[in-house]
Image: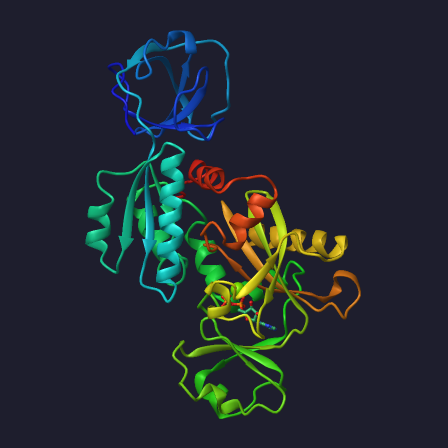
Length: 391
Ligand SMILES: Nc1ncnc2c1ncn2[C@@H]1O[C@H](COP(=O)(O)OP(=O)(O)O)[C@@H](O)[C@H]1O
Ligand SMILES: [Mg+2]
């Protein structure tokens, strides 16, 4: 959103440091990055608002971007009249071309609706593998890009790199953590260095996994870089490993094989520097697969999980550790197994971090936010207000 302001100043994009609301509401102070990449502070006062669409603002320029703090101190600089007050313009990217396209469309549609309810101006962008079309869809330039994509292309650093290139602030994690978290092998290798408990495992070729047991069963075979349980198989004692050959293996040359961790399934959402809550996912039948995750009633979410307090605390600590170690920003969600036959929290085992967690109103992370009193719409607004361009 740009404002015509007094001569000698750049037009500025408004971002409220202290409020998730994109509208003027009485006395507020907004921090604005000008096109000259210097900070503008806008100070205004209710008393100066003569009509809902007119506000007198004082522009204070000169501080480096990032130094904005709410400050009602000395008013300096020039005063200008904002001719119009617009809502912040958010482009919601959804769809994409990964195996999770349909989920992303549901996430994105709900996010767009919620942001409109909060007063943002929203453009919906169905992302295809067409860069020229994406650039067209992102012009005129939105103030923020809400990345509601999941899986390959949208969660692995690719779209993040494009948005960095375009200089657009976007939500969720930057390119590097996105790429890292998408690769389960790299993630485990990195997180093991900070003491994260991870399942024993090996990375083998597709040929090796099809040729015979590479670990004593039971074990789990999963793609290194898919999501939503796509391609995940569990090989039980007595199973023939050729179960994998039945429909071939379509998920790339590198295959992750992990010891099967018995017990329960936990997931922990992180919002900034806070782990929200622990959810236990109880599959209605057996293994928690794609259908169980997304079919109505396919699984039961117990939030907060009915587990001992020390396990809850440790799962939250580990989710935050993963978020911070990987360099995630905004929200993320980490998946764990918990072998409850082991004492205390010692049976916790990290599986993966999702940098673009599912985002329908009944998805795990929004549900956890709701459990701690943050509505879906407020969560969406928080994410928008924490969007960044990192390059
Ligand atoms: N080592 C393991 N032991 C037991 N179950 C596992 C293991 N790895 C994966 N699973 C099961 O497969 C599901 C998907 O695996 P995960 O690593 O979270 O990948 P993704 O969700 O990206 O497909 C998990 O939620 C869990 O139910
Ligand atoms: Mg998972």
